Image (tube, rainbow over all chains, first blue to last red):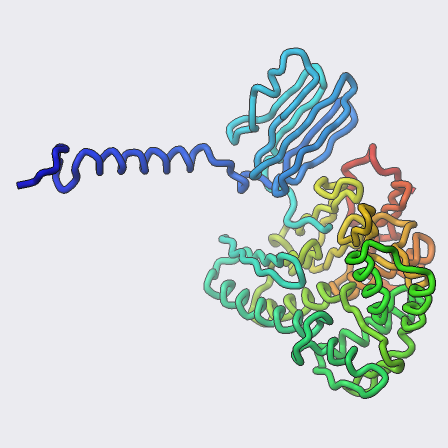
Length: 128
Length: 318
């Protein structure tokens, strides 16, 4: 006679099933929410009308920039980029979080800043 | 078309090989053989490797006493290096080892090299005292010391290209810590596109070159450095005074040989813009993209055909 008080379904008891479900859900969340550096190794940042440059997403970094109307701080971590801080009043760009694969850009209208994916890995290598 | 990519750590850097191919097993086998060949040459050229497999170590230990026999692949590297030393009137010089050692020692002690120690070290820097006959190399003065840090990655990258091509690889990109070797073109219609780092913000791309079958090598003041008392002294040293060079921020060279590109990039950093450009123009098929200390962009005559400047507001064309 089995002294274990938990219910048994097939060869698994309830604890086993809960553990299996947790593992499956965690795996799905990890795959879907993890940064995906293979999307692009670079992002294009445009500030104001003139300044436009590429940022290497393979290197974790925090960068501060003066804009025509204030200042911004970009954070690159694990192949993703976000507006970490901005002097803008509405903070929409900061609240958007990391630029997701399905999103075209992060736009900060008050600071005239656009962060966008380089649509495909633009360079085959970087000489440095 | 699939891609086979793998990397290895050597020469204190990551080396990545990227092969677009329809034959993955052929590419993987070629890559394995290439990494093995690179690792062997890397050890032979490493002066800090004390075992007998380091040929440069053997030459240094035998300075002023006896010559050392070198295999053909290595003696050819020395011939190229000596050619650039002569052409640059010693701005590029393999015998800078004692000066490098002085800076490494300063990094440990936190005390800058004294002028007397620097003078003494510079007295041992003279490429004309590196003698080569047949496959033998001999350093005339005892305590002379070779340092191949300025060309080792280039030499090893050339060997990688040769090995990959001998295995039937027609298209590939090799990235040896920023020394890029483009083998063939990306596709039949498309060249390889290589970004060039902004020397003021090396994680940004200041522009790019489109190349087929060329090496793209950059020397810059933002790369390795000696940290002494919180101050940063970059690693490209003048053979004139032993101190870090100051007139240029970065030099990118395009050349079919990565070894040549590596040696020329250092030579131009030391020579400065005018003499540096003259040196580049004396080698047909060689192009240079130079950023001066005041952020002027200086291009060799044919570089425009390859290079596109992206950060136009940060660098002014000269």
